[in-house]
Image (tube, rainbow, N blue to C red):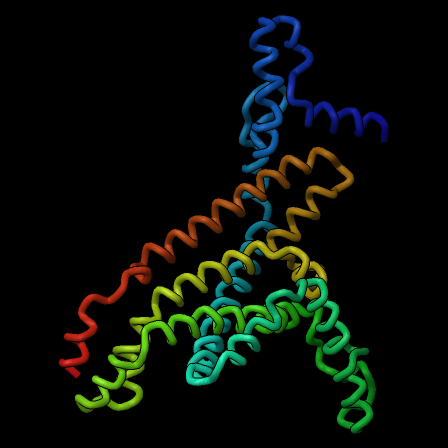
Length: 295
């Protein structure tokens, strides 16, 4: 055991002690200064650059499964949040300030508090399970459907929707109230029905707001750690949970893989957001009036 710890410490050492005496003092101090930065991204080992940690991560089947889980949660959670948030914003468009206040109520609630509420409400021994048993809808607590810690991450999605739908509605509600209803009234006067007015007039004007809300929600869900850890299954894990598991592994040599996986997760997240922004959603439609005349 002691020998393994010595080997792990040597593997994580920023400098190679075997060649330290042969180096110029200036280079040794340069190595010492650069070691924390390169070690933080998982490419520095024993005084030289190496990409071995990235290779081990990319060859690990658990990385692919974790990436699939994180993309599944981020894409599905973002899509549902935007769709439900858009519907809620359209319903509350003509409401007063109380609508904005209602959408803001969930924002200051910490995610850990929300997770606790989900567990108390939806777990097999939670409130809904007890109500179903009292009403004789289920024979026991075990008959209640598994909504938390399930392979489908239903508990995680429910929590994300509870948190992100009001957030998306708040952004879209501000956009709806700011753009007014002149274009929609003009399209209705020119003979378009309600669906055509929404699809060709309202939705294009909402695209900048949808993009802003979508990027924020996607980035948060993709990098969320505590919610998948507490409400998700033990396997397969989301990417942030996988990073935590590698970093807290008893074998300290696995920390290089944790750092490499964290950098890969950041690169993937930035790339996906860049692709989303590059689709052209951020551009305001310039021919809205002409499109209305063509309806």
